[in-house]
Amino acid sequence: MSTSPSNTQPDTNQSWGGRFSEPTDAFVARFTASVDFDRKLALHDIQGSRAHATMLAQVGVLTDDERDAILEGLNEVQADIVAGTFEWSVELEDVHMNIEARLTDKIGITGKKLHTGRSRNDQVATDIRLYLRDEIDTVAAELARLRHGLIELAEREADTIMPGFTHLQTAQPVTFGHHLLAWQEMLSRDHERLLDCRKRVNVMPLGAAALAGTTYPIDRHMTAELLGFERPAENSLDAVSDRDFAIEFTAFASLLLMHLSRMSEELVLWTSAQFAFIDLPDRFCTGSSIMPQKKNPDVPELVRGKTGRVYGHLMSLLTLMKSQPLAYNKDNQEDKEPLFDTLSTVQDCLKAFADMIPAIESKSDNMREAARKGFSTATDLADYLVRKGVAFRDAHDIVGRSVAYGLREGKDLSDMSLDELRQFSETISDDVFEVLTLDGSVAARNHIGGTAPNQVRAAAQRARDALGAINSGATNNGVTR
Image (cartoon, rainbow, N blue to C red; front, side, top):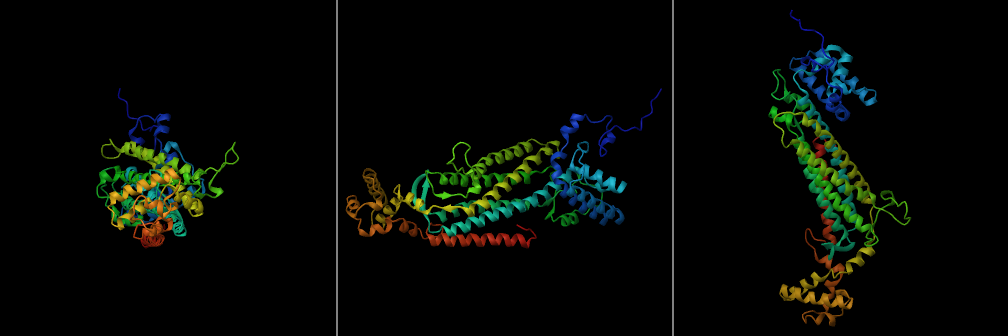
């Protein structure tokens, strides 16, 4: 006796259950679901759906009434999400199916037509790009605020002398403003990398469908324009499987956090009693539960520690993508949590630094006294001898013997008498003391990129102008930073 096929459908996800003969195992449903974290994309998912529905109506796939019903329904769904009354379901797997199911509940069968001509593959790739594009603009604004604070502080400290270091040993005197502008240069490169990354984020996958495109007469250029994308992606296979943009952002973040970590290390050193170069306001520090005298620079220490967290996310994303065949694979569900955490970590670190840096108070007397130690003007004495006609190698030897003498006698070069200095070279005359002073040393580096105070002020102004040009360009492009 033949058995007729049953019309009873298993209790499976309504978007794809027709092919399946039994429901998904409860554990597998939880294991494969992403809604617990990809709901962060909800508003951008609705943004993409509005543009998709508008385009479908324009090309005749939807009627105007169907488009209007979908747009009105999406507005209601968004209001529920914003109000916190939206009920998320693990059984519906992800943010896309949760929103579509709720839309269908609200407007009926028309809600099911929204997915015409697209797949969750191109949908999620579009959502991530929309989300990351907005987050990049937030990161850029905080980065610009930090750079502005550094520039302002550098100008205030243009005349403050401190020791410059190599190998963490006193090398030559520099100005504190010059040192701060070195930090600013690091961040300037980071800023350029971030804005360059944004260009590659701003490409639209929507319309690639599952992997091969769609047979519907869609207008991808229209959808791209509605969503503010520079252009639609050229290749449907690449469009749904590419996560280079997420890796590139995380690579930017790794470089940025490496720079913030270097800055943090110096801040930690400088606040110590052994250096005592700067003071951080109490609001950026904490105390000890057992040692009442302690004031710990927790903010820079924690930023230094979070660097490893971001490095880990970069390696996670690189490893995620390294062996995937084209096109989309379920592996890519693992792209979001590393990216989301990288974004929140970067934004928090930048905010902390942008708030903290302008509040730094320099202990200029301590810095200057430290610069007097360690024979920081030794190179100036060598240069002085060269200008007097002494070969550089001979001048190097003369200064080396002078330093050795100073170590034995406990005297810095600037503390030695003319007779003491002349025992190493009769070329030295009383004008030598003009170059052995800290102020004379920094003032002599009077060229672009040098540490002379007037050069520091000029460099700060150039940096301010460059930052202003970036902000102006962002505003002209319709982006607020």
